[in-house]
Image 1 (tube, rainbow, N blue to C red):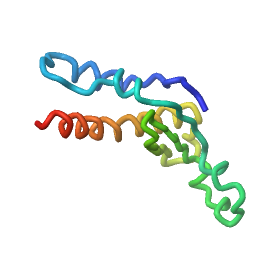
Image 2 (image 1 turned 120 degrees about the vertical axis):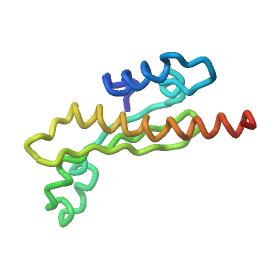
Image 3 (image 1 turned 90 degrees about the vertical axis):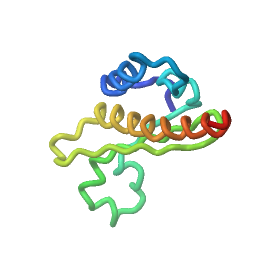
Length: 119
């Protein structure tokens, strides 16, 4: 488990672009991050280590999963996997899978806000 939010230039760029010129309510990156209770990562090979037949599948060794638990108890699973095993980088996998979680949450929070505010 970790409270760290990995740096992602892509998410920051999305936030900056969304903020530029916005005059009406919007869901921002800081709000989404404030709703995260905790998150952690694992790689595909560690996740299924007890199943030796599945472990033989090389692609799972380059899969990174981020499990994000929101303060509400809702869980989001983000994933990342490079095309080539030679490109696997655990740090990049953590950043990209974390980013995948955030990108899933953005429209969910927007939907919730719209429902709550009868728009």
